[in-house]
Image (cartoon, rainbow, N blue to C red):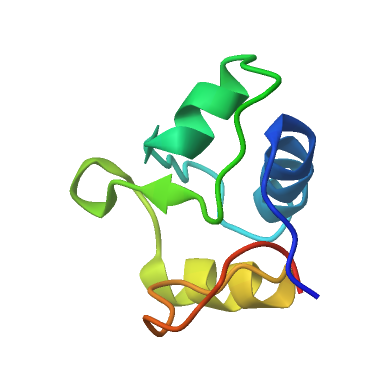
Length: 84
């Protein structure tokens, strides 16, 4: 079942992700998920957009951790979003 991503789901994802990635990891979030994280309670999105060129992250570590949490990195175009 797919689920839309709101502030609560995104914050839970980032809290869990933080425990799975190296210290010093920085992710720059943009798009609808950024608006939701800023407190727009009615804002939902189907994904979390990360600006890779501006982020500091071990990509392989991030991909593995994100997949474990139900958020694939660069998913297939048929991806319908949310947590699986």
